[in-house]
Image (cartoon, rainbow, N blue to C red; front, side):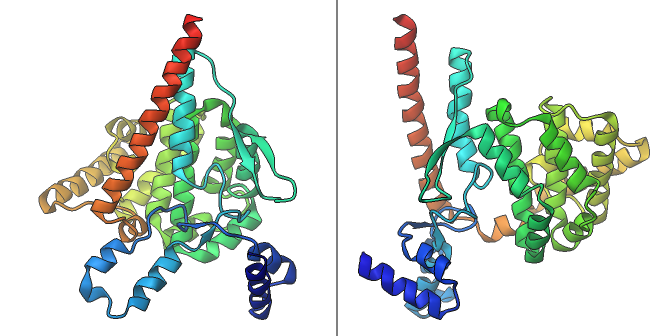
Length: 332
């Protein structure tokens, strides 16, 4: 292990990595899927024989898809992966509904490996949101990434909404107000709307729909002016670029009517018609419109079903033992 770390550090320095960063990277030992994904992505490739000729192509795909370092301070956070909200958040929601009490939630903060500590989830979310989603310098740098970056922003918005549902105490109304100022009003004059229209209009459709659903559900006490501006931006994107039929954009009839109620009648009729036409077209063709990145990075069906089955099984067993524990405590 020590010899490998020394050799890795030396190679990294030779490739231009700073000595300090090279030493940090040389000690990393656990790797996983990149960009919040899961699965290697090689099963479908292996089975599609005409997609590769040399084994090295499979190896390259594996190394690329599984090359994220666990321990990288820039990668993982409460917003980074929807499974954090799904499992940790789902457990919190279940405990709250069974016991009537909102449990404490903590994350292990490994960003400084010399000072590992437990961090309250609300604090972790506050720090992450203000250093990423609400940080102009971070946003400007990420906007250089194009389509992938745009769609990662939309995923982060979905994860923010998810935490709002699972553990409302971790997301305050001010966070959504600040997101409104940053992404709807573009108060920092970063060219937010231009970036998303060029990189991925579908991502901004998703983000605006998520904000409106958060308000519709009562998790964000948005003003009428805020709702009108978001609804007008959302429907103008739908009109200009056609609906990107993700769940928030096309499959929520109550949200659709909520949006329509916030805009002038003529604009509302056009909006409803745009949604209706794309859904009818999808029924006729049997296709599904998704964000491009989601479509390209889909895990093959069999692999996805296996992973989903494992995750569901773990969740059920965990919740079962939790409920048994709670019921025993109640009897005592």
